[in-house]
Image (tube, rainbow, N blue to C red):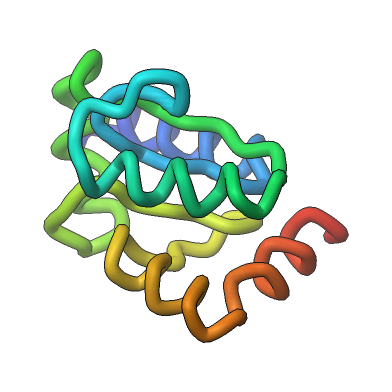
Length: 107
């Protein structure tokens, strides 16, 4: 990954408390896994931002290297990589996601 892409990803993650790198955006997810993440975050009624990796091939590849995680979507809370769709679903079902989100938004 080139330094410019890394800097762009750093800035996105550091400037958004809840950020989802996904296919599409929160208004129009372009895959089922991205849609799952959007629906979960919407159900928590919290503000979050999205980055459409389909519109930026460098970000699409770069975020996989950045997080050392091979799949999209990727969720960051307060600068920390949480995981993808399956992990978010699991945290949500266990009731742990709400707490993580509240901590991220409070900091």
